[in-house]
Image (cartoon, rainbow, N blue to C red; front, side, top):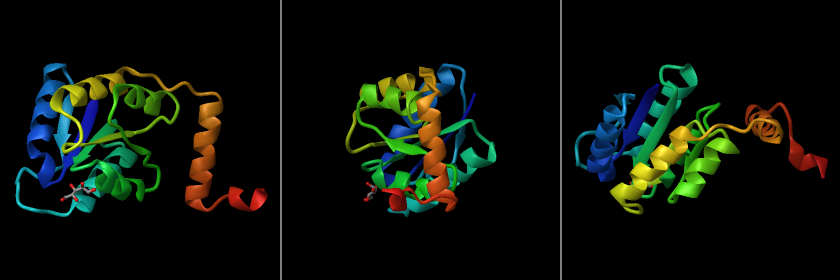
Length: 154
Ligand code: RB5
């Protein structure tokens, strides 16, 4: 499996630790993030990973900024991205099982390295549960593409 990883300046070390952890497990990791600790703009890296995921260049993504929020908001502006910010292992599992999240995001200022590794494991080993969850994801993509407006339907 090929994983795209992206980060801003707050998460250079976390990105390196997580990348090495994944490579040791046999994953192919593509680095879309910054390797410099000078202040930079997280939307660049969120968009890069988002586009790599939706184009099929990578199978899924991992995004890390200070909180995981800004970089995931940016990624979620790319059509077809479902980036989920997590700070615990249960959520990291459920975002794959229920939301089929194609990007796991977290904050280098929020979670420690061991929690981050456990979240990555939980996310990558979980399986999307399809059924009603697939129907809800289809609804999200209808909203995103302008095909449908559920807000008007009461
Ligand atoms: C950078 O200072 C910080 O704002 C960024 O890493 C992230 O937390 C934004 O959501």
